[in-house]
Amino acid sequence: MTGMGDMTDMIERRGFRIYPGLLGRDAQQAVVTRLRECLAQAPLYRPVTPRGREMSVRMSSAGRFGWVTDRRGYRYEPRHPSGVDWPPIPPEIMEIWNTVSGCDRAPECCLINWYGEGARMGLHQDKDEADFGQPVVSVSLGDDGLFRMGNTERGGSTESIWLHSGDVVVMDGEARLRHHGVDRIRFGSSTLLPQGGRINLTLRVVT
Image 1 (tube, rainbow, N blue to C red):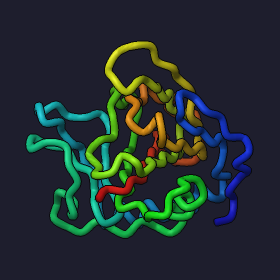
Image 2 (image 1 turned 180 degrees about the vertical axis):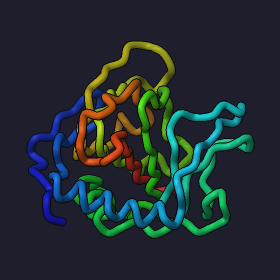
Image 3 (image 1 turned 45 degrees about the horizontal axis):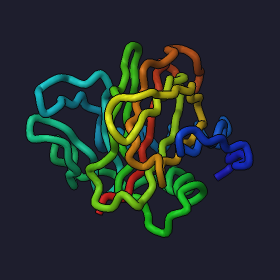
């Protein structure tokens, strides 16, 4: 994919490997174009937690599975809540995984989270997968997001860093089960998405 940057600028925080600006503008736009095609098949929807609380992000997925949450709990499902199949993960996104993951397995889910003005994501662990030895790769597109990194157990000190459009984060090793979240976004800080907002892609091996 054209527009992939240099990996030597990687920084590490609490085991999270952060690749600032790995995706240049052309690469970001190519991914957004593909995402529009995915969302035409499996539209964004507003999920609720098992307790019935509506989340502030809207979400969808691509791949063999999609991550969902509703009154029945957190889980992976083979179809969108509307009943349609999830679209395949676009090759441009697969290339990001192949570049940074160090994993010989392909991701089975690309979770698509869209953050509008005021949206956030509380501290949580990615732990609905079968094998925690497989990495999680996160891609930021659009507005800046304040990414908070915590610990494997709840509580204790945390550390935060602003993620910008084109940044990629890899969670493996000691970071794989660390709590993490997005405290807020700087709405309108990027021109990538015409209406503003932030897209976060999370690539995971599910089975």
